[in-house]
Length: 148
Ligand code: FES
View 1 (cartoon, rainbow, N blue to C red):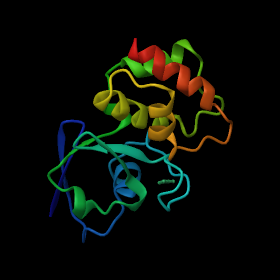
View 2 (view 1 turned 90 degrees about the horizontal axis):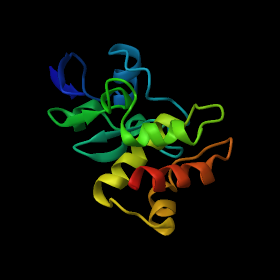
View 3 (view 1 turned 90 degrees about the vertical axis):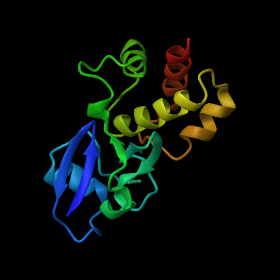
View 4 (view 1 turned 135 degrees about the horizontal axis):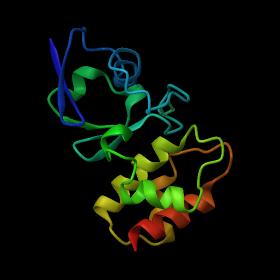
């Protein structure tokens, strides 16, 4: 039996431990805000926080995150008004929107460790999050706005 603590709530999870965290989140526990993109740790769509650090949940076995603090996009705020989410809304960042929860989770992790990042910090921190619509410039502006 594995205990997953997600957004402050404990879930008992009966699995051999090899299941990727993304499947547990989406298919079993119904936290559907975290998205499946590549399944290979390459696109960032599945980014969540584990003890405050951004991780690719598609390549993270549940056994590796047992008893750690997991935060998904649903756990950032009750009403979608975390300062980073608010900046995303103010600047209309998303186009299709599919990658954006992963983008936001990476941006929040960046701002938690570097409250006032410069362009280079942002490019480096966000380089693992791919957006097929090319919203990169708006993402950068929104991170600066959230940092103000
Ligand atoms: Fe996990 Fe692409 S779905 S990195």
